[in-house]
Structures are given as structure tokens and as C-alpha cells.
Image 1: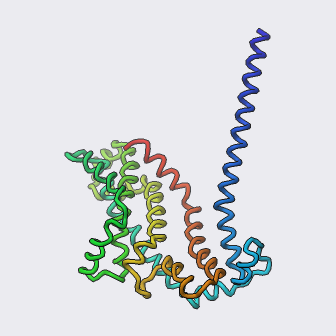
Image 2: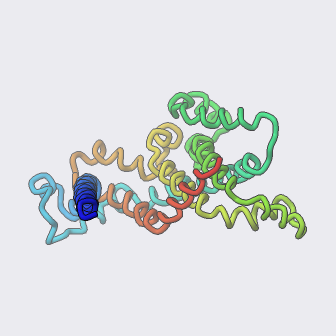
Image 3: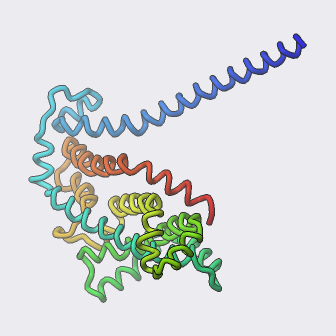
Length: 290
């Protein structure tokens, strides 16, 4: 018995040592990740408070004496405020359209059984493999014929079409986990299909809608490729286009570049931090049943 007990103690100690080594490796990986992402963000924000000469000579030095000239130039010289407004209008409009049409399509795919449903899902998954540049020419010709080039809708409609498949799959996967007893009880109480969707399924599926909205917003907000082609007019130019023109229009003003990047990234990062819990819940629970 004593030998057995000693053997169990050795096994326990061995497991404890292995667990400690696993924890150590996890912390090493997390530290490396933080150095490659969090510190990079700190480096950008820190250099935004320096003039271009100091960024070139001492880019890793902390700005103990910050200057605000870069932020003043960002709003005066490149009109970054207008770029903010344009990006919020087009990205926000894209999110609303995607959630509206994607939510309705997800409701049909998750709550109804009909012929060709599996084939439709296969087509949706296959459409995710089509690169965006493969559809540029026909989309651009369509926008020219409808006179939507260099307008807000000229970027909102292509981005809505590009992000709609992702939203449908995420929302449909989450709605499929909702018990059908709720739907039956709602019909007994006199609800129609629209009331069922807006008053029952929509509030319950809030985490999935939140996760889909933030991903669609980020992809639309950072979509430089589509913006270069569809909305190159200054009046409707989003903020990502302003970033691409700083180096060519104003030389090598690295302080202004760091400021523009900070002003572009920080607001999105703040929004993401507030709704990150909804993103995790929506993606994990929607993967339970499809």
C-alpha cells in the first residue's frame, strides 16, 4: 500500500511539473504575442506625439514632451475629420444592410426546411472562396450604368454583397440553436412571422448580430481595395484612402503618418473592447448546431 501511495505521489508530482511547464510556455507565447501587437500599437501612438525628425532619429524613445502639431495637421492638411464621417456613413450603412438582409435570410435558412436547402448552404460556403478582385470589373460596370460611382452607395452595395454570406452563415448557425418551442408558443399567442423575428429571435440572437456587425464593420472600414476603385472622389473618400495618400502627398512626414494611423485604429479598438464579450458568445454558441 505504501509503495502504491508513493507511486501515486510521483505521478501527481510529474503532472504538476508538466502543468507548470505548460503554463510557462503559455505565458511565453502570450508575451511574444503582446510584444508583436500591443507594443506595436503603443509604438504608433507614441510616435504620433513626435515631429518627423524625432521619429526618424529616436523612434523607440518615449515621448515625454509630446507635441500636438501632428494632430492639428491631420485635421487641417488632410481633412481627416471628413474621412471619418465618410467611413462611418459607408461602414455603418453596410452593417445595417448586411444585418437586415442577412438576418432575414438566416431566419429562413434556420427555421424552414425546403428543397435545395443543403445545396444553398453549399453555394454560400463556396462563395466565400471567391476573391474580391475577381468581381471588380462587372461590379464597376454595373455601378457606372446605375451612376453610383463616387457615391456612398457605390461602396456600400458592393461591400454589402461581399459580407452578406458571412453574416448569413453566422446568424443562421446561431438561430438554429434556438428551441422551436418558443416559435410555437409565439404563434399560439398570435404572433406573425415578422413579429416572431423582431420580438423573439432578434433579441435572443443579439450576441450573433453583435459579432457579425463588428466583423462587417471592420472589414468595410479597412477595405482599401474597393475604396480605391469605387469612391476615389475627394468628397466621399473614406479614411483609409487618406492614409494611402499621406506618403505621396506630403513626403516622408512619419509623425503625421503615425498620427493618422492612431486616429484610424484607436476608435475601432475601443468599440471592439466594449462588445468583445458578445463576439465570443455569438461565434461559440452559433457553432453548436448548424
